[in-house]
Length: 218
Ligand code: SF4
Ligand code: SF4
Image: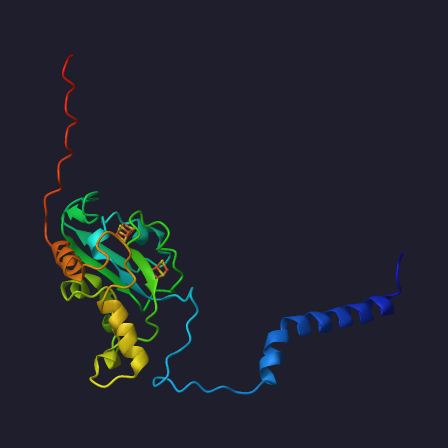
């Protein structure tokens, strides 16, 4: 049925108002709700389980395949290696060439997490560190190989290195230093993991495949 132009006009106006109100529903709800001030940094932020913060990187499992770097839409992952690396099934760590450099430029990173799913060894993850600052662009490049030599998987903001820290920060630091995010064959053996992290920075021999024993003729 054909309606008059006036009817169409008012119907469009009403539809536009309705659509705006639907879109603004959450904003309007917060406009009239009580303001909550979080006493950060004394009180930590409430991060959701799928929060995407600065990465944590398990270098000991990285086979330097470049899959993460290729998936990155802004080319901010830099990888250098001295040779191919391969996971040793017995120990669960990667052996072979040295990881010379694994760095992420956080002045470009969009925290999109597209680098995570392609990783064949599940060694790069989005972490929980949410604040990091620097005075230059270079300060925003995190050298994960240097962190690994210090037994760290994720960068620590400078202010978190102070002596007196709120309890929630101490807890976060403990999680990183105890490798609580790493769930693999080395779980609970932190000395072994630290040794494997340092080993990843040097060249090692890839264990040769054992040949199956030949069956003797009966
Ligand atoms: S989170 Fe996104 S932008 Fe950042 S390194 Fe990964 S793929 Fe690149
Ligand atoms: S995809 Fe995983 S294994 Fe490959 S280079 Fe990136 S972090 Fe290392």
